[in-house]
Each structure stands twice: as C-alpha cells, then as structure tokens.
Amino acid sequence: MSLDIRRERRGFSWRINRLGLVAVLLALLGGCATPNGPQPSLQRPDEVRANIVRLLPSGTRDAQGWAIDIYAAFSALRIDPDDSNLCASLAVIAQESSFHADPAVPGLAGIARAEIDRRAGDLHIPKLAVRAALHIKSPDGRRYDERIAAVRSEGELSRIYEDVIGSVPLGKRLFADANPVRTGGPMQVSVAFSEAFAGEHSYPYPVDGSIRHEVFTRRGGLCFGIAHLLAYPAHYEKLLYRFADFNAGRYASRNAAFQDAVSRASGIPLVLDGDLIRHGRVDKASQIGATELAVRSLAASLDLSNAQIRRDLEKGDRSEFEDTRTWRGVFALAERTEGHPLARALIPRIRLESPKITRKLTTQWFATRVDQRYQACMEKTVGSARSAG
Image (cartoon, rainbow, N blue to C red):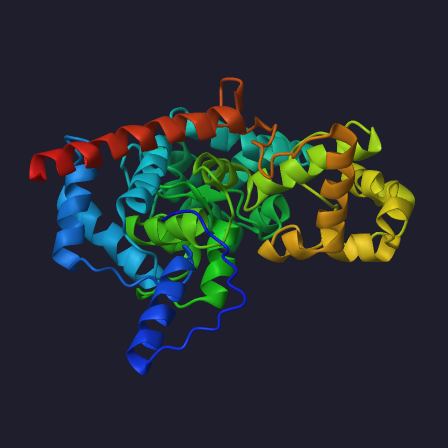
C-alpha cells in the first residue's frame, strides 16, 4: 500500500501459544507497513523487473535498462515494488522526462545565456566583461560561449556552470559557488534534496564525482526521485497528494490543509502554499510569516505561547507535526467553527515559475496530470490480472 495506516490495538487479553503469538506479531507488523520502512517483496527480482517492463509506456527505449534501475532504487530504498508504488513512480517519470535520463529542454541555450546576463546586470558587471569571460576556452577545448550555444540538457548545463565557477575568474562572482541548475534527471528531482538524502542514507552506487552528477544519471535520478516521492510517511487518502508534494515539497499538501484550518479558525485569509514559517532567525515581528502570525492570533484559545507555536511549526517538514498541540488545537477550533470535519490534505495553491515554463502552470495542474498517468498505469495492472486469470 502507498498510504500509511495507523492502527491502535488496546485491551488484548488473549491466551495464545508461541506459534499464535508469532502469527499475531507478523499480522501487526504487516498492518503498520509504510513506504519508507523495510518492505520485503514476496516477488522475485526478475518477476518485479518483468512487471516494470509491462507497465512502461509502449515504445520506451531500453525498457530492460529502465526496469533494472527502477527495481534497484526500490530495493535500495526498501520500498515495496507493488503495482501502486511502481505506477506512481512511472507516472512522475513520464510527466517529468518522458523516460529520458537527462531530458532535452527546448530553448535551454537562450535560457542559460539570459541567466548569465541577468546575474551580471544585478552585479553591475559590463556586458563586454561577460563576453570576454565566455570567450575563454573551457576544459573540453571549446569556448564557454560555444558550449552554452550547443547545450541541450540540464546535465550538460550544470557541468558548464561547474567549469565556469571553477576556472573563470568572473565565474565565482557571477554564481557565488552556487550552481543555478537546481533540478535534473528523469524525475527532475531537486539536487539539494538529493545531496541531503545521500548525507543521511547509503547510496547504492559509486559516486561519479559528486551527488549532483549522479542526479543527472538514470540510476541516480531514479533513486533520489523515488525517495522524494515515496520514502516518507504521509497519511494521505490519495496518491494525488504525494504527487502534489513531489512538486511543492514534502508535506505541502498536509500543511496546506493546516493553513486552511488556521484561516477558518482565525478569520484571517492565507495563501494555501504549504509554507508554515519563514526559516532562519526571526528578530522582528515583521520577519514572521503570515501563517505563523495567524496561528499566534489563536494563542489564547490554544493555550499555547508564541514560542511553543514556533517550535511546533518548525516541525512542518516532518510527520511529527501532526502530533503537536498546535496541529490538534487548530483543527479542533476550526471544526467547532465550521461544524464539520475538515480535510487533512489539500492541493497547495502554487503557481509554477521557472525560465523553462512558458505557460501558466500550477501544482494542481502537475498533480492532476501525474494522477491521470497513474490511473492509466493502474488500468494496465487490472488488464494484466484479467489476462492472467
């Protein structure tokens, strides 16, 4: 199952033998399975890989290679490769890259050059100096402006930026050692997330120079992308909300529902974007975010101090937030006000902005599109089951 289920069992006074106890414990453990916990599959690896090949879109190039790397990611992450989890992952891959390890981005050369010119303008660097810097030969023998003009993918562009930062005097000033390519690979996963995840978990492959480089490979992009999608506990009734989280950040859908409850309880309109606090040191009231200020307006009703509210909201990127007094108290107040239960997950209302995006797109659009692909994939599993029957 892709959804986490909490189950409480109290008052057990059974008298059972040792064998019965083992059976009960196994049943309990099975009922508490979560996407990020140990999930031994009952299928053999070759059976899972064959199933992945069946579920891939027809005409996928190197289907066997994709199946090998997808299965390896599930195995390394200890996530059950059941049909639902597989279809969820395949849906994101199809949406983000159409099954290309380092997908081409239309007009990327122009986007890259515009970004360099924008940064130079912000720093008041003359255009003549920028042109001179890009006329320098890069480590591969071509000039930087030649490489940028020919760039097709984010992986290629990331390497160019690395070389610019490392070998062009103006590079460090332009980019301050921060590579502006932030996502990549077949699932367009965040480089920052991947680096953080690799710092806390074992990565199953030899690293090609850096985790950033691994993101732009099929194996690495799949491993980190599937981790971002499935390797965290979330009590969602629909995978739709995981798809929204993949786009907006982990727990963004849950947090958007919390913001809705805060708004209903306080009467203060809020943007339901899933961001609960402004991170970093907060020294002045003007530096406190809108959601935190709205929750503080309920402090007396919640019987909580501003400091306690802050500590609870800082757990907004973790599952424990749902166990805090702030979470429970806000929903209790809001539901008394509304007179009915409120949703614990809502699609964040976020407009997607990127130099790569030329249309008006939102997190709602992304999650819906991925969910449509997921449903189509699950239809394949139904068809396979009928054929097997």
